[in-house]
Image 1 (cartoon, rainbow, N blue to C red):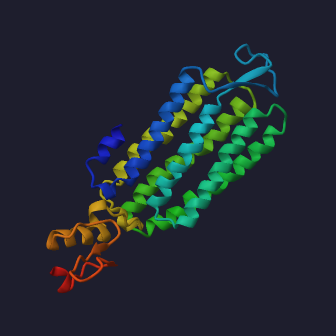
Image 2: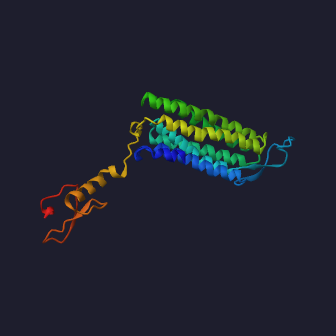
Image 3: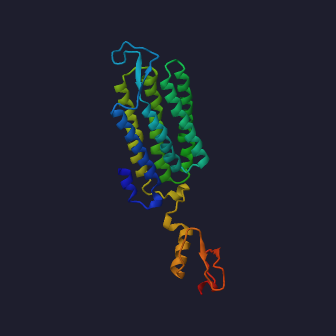
Length: 274
């Protein structure tokens, strides 16, 4: 709600990063409400049975709702970063696809009880390596060319994200993968990472964008009352008393005609004024 409130202080066509960041935190809030209610999990037989009392047993709680959260929020996080860097849309979409592969392979690996889980883990790590490369190299260079303020905003947020995301496979390895720490410790581990990677990241991003016009990033967004088509229609209606519509078509209504219609570009002839 804080990010939505901050969005209200900006013109509507400058709110894209506020809305994306607000969506990230809202989805995460629902996921953590589910996990705090002890919902959104399933028992899975473990590959490694431990003697430690906190992880002893034949199965382990796997919170699949966490992966649903990541499936929705991590593409939004990447969109925040890659749009900040002014990256072209084909690159943005491909990086998001790779991110989805990373999340899905992590979930499948967590749900597999055999050693095949480590194959999925390897696929996920390969996808993560590509994402980190894009952030720390390609996107960073692109952002620096757009201006020092944009480069600074991207480096601060991108560095935080790259560092935190590298820690997630470590958490997976000692939790869902290796069954080393208890589900309670797992919740603390992932919880700290998620707080830093989402609300803290969001606050840092919005602060970095405080003086950046989205147009400098190639985001030429129009408000509804600045759309040329709408403006031309409204101007025609005000000047000549002709009802505006959404198609750019006016009814001539000239005597001796069949009340035909024809398109207008906002230029009215003398006959139409009769």
